[in-house]
Image 1 (tube, one colour):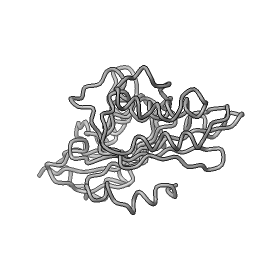
Image 2 (cartoon, one colour):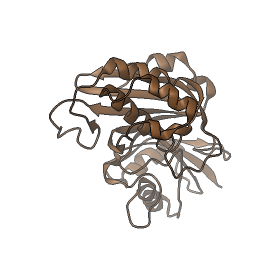
Image 3 (cartoon, one colour):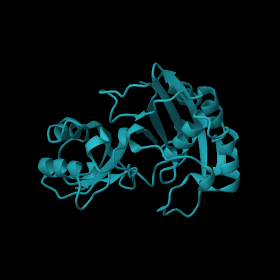
Length: 263
């Protein structure tokens, strides 16, 4: 009998060319597919909640696949982990409704971006953050982050190569906090455009450098002009933290209130 298995996956994206299968490069989807093959004997390409780019990391990527295997749903976690490389780990596994789809059933996502802001580079954070050496105006960046909150057209924050019909998205949370030399940006929304978070962060860093005023974010949202914004942040500092499948949890004040204390 066919079943659908839902997986929550954590991975270090440093050596992968993103989530999606690539002809000439290794992807997370590929190594997961090979692990499923070794466990079940089935040729399966799992669906994912989002196509994270090369170098992007995940604490809570979600995938699913249909199987006829008799392995209990919760046992897929330890079983698949024995076949996966050390930088890809199944956090949990469960049986899902056959109509469930990691991408199309999603109600929203939480992304995090980490900046290392100090003169020296880091051996530990080299592939896990964006190293910005110069001084940044943290208060200006925090002010800029506030302009993202709400329902807006985010055309100016979408890179070329998009395949969407609308640029309207709702952002429920957008804010920075400090942890020593790390500047951490979190954002929660009902959806994000291609490279949207990286453009948001790159623009706010240029604001922190004094190149723009915080109000440039509001103006870009109103005009839809990508050319008025700053650089696109590199992928290394970006993390997919969580995919939401419940509107109440997505908009929960408890979740939002606890973001800054999340590890």
